[in-house]
Length: 113
Length: 115
Image 1 (cartoon, each protein chain N blue to C red):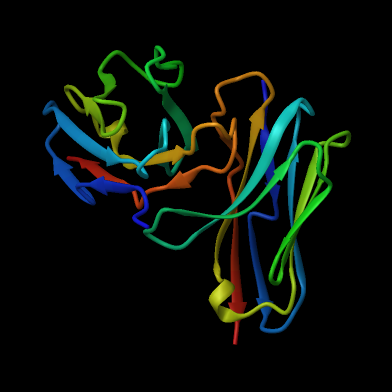
Image 2: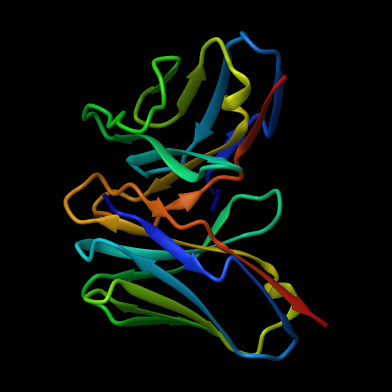
């Protein structure tokens, strides 16, 4: 059974700091991995999608890496801003299934001005 | 263009009543998913529709839950005889056809409260 774990559960940093969010998964047979952002009371906003054949994806100040063999992904946020405060979720799609996402519990980030 | 929309945004109901939640996917997206987000369980898959194929219902928690997708577009999730443990945010997502297991786009969700 695929399990996804995110560490830490919560993180508070001062503005401007670079930070790393971690995601691990137990079954390396994944099709892709997707990082989302969720603001309080809102739906999910897709940030980055990494296919299993890729090592990383970048969008602006965000960089996500994927190491399938070790079952890990990291989301790197450069020069954090108060507007980055949200819950960040990673989710994987297991190879061979219907494309349903299996989510971690999320990391709640607070960036203090 | 328009994203995934869901209605209602909030629903409060009494235990034992039936509820219907609606999802309008992005136009042209043939794959549609329902997920549930609750405090104790996080985000869980419920059901998946792909075109005219039989849906994957493996995530539905009980036979009180059902969903349909009419005309390959709008989907309705129905919960019969609601229980307090059904209280959660119900999220719908869609993705384009021809991009197997590509990026999923989520709606804002329906917050269901069962009193």
